[in-house]
Image 1 (tube, rainbow, N blue to C red):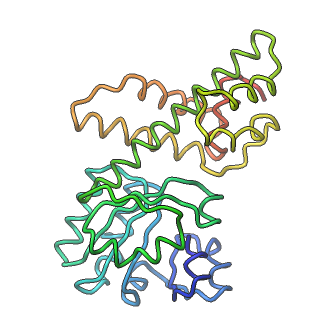
Image 2 (cartoon, one colour):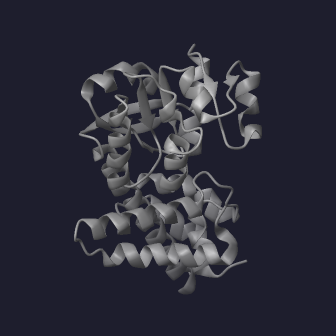
Image 3 (cartoon, rainbow, N blue to C red):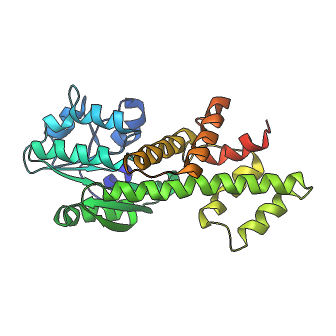
Length: 274
């Protein structure tokens, strides 16, 4: 995402907890900041893309947090996948400082990010969205405005709920076919060419066939997102038995050492193949 901004002529100052991950950006012309605070002091707009609510909060309002460096009227765009109640809390923290805020999580993983083909799901003020639209357009192929603060994050949880459940069901279906003596490739190709299979599963075909689960979207992050769904359902007095079962299946896969693999490795866990 940062690379696409840089390649399209935007001046960039970057911070990452592991500087080594930012070296290619620095080599390409981005400036390095020693802290989130330093980023904010030197920026008009701050984008964040972080692993979970705890990290977002610590980077935003912890020691050297960037909300303490942004001047009034500046804009924070959080692209992290977090829960809606947390997003509204961050919007409130920004508002206390007269800083504008958008939640803009993305649908899409590593390859769409590299190709500028993410889908942004945006919550917040429409005028703020229009200000950053040119930047979002170089990082993504679509911008879907969802409504007030927290609505972008809400839609992202809906999307990732379907993502995790669909992947698990597909993996279980392939395992059933194999158990009945069907050829794995035949099962996968038949499913992918039928009416019941989500389009994104085409991108997971070779991972399952080649038993190569190099991460595009790590399994541990998908399990985290399902936990956020479960937490949000509780906050909204909603029972989600299928979600909770699916979340625990991914949790068991994590315990078996698949955390850093692509979430399609749920097939490997369910099939009990080494």
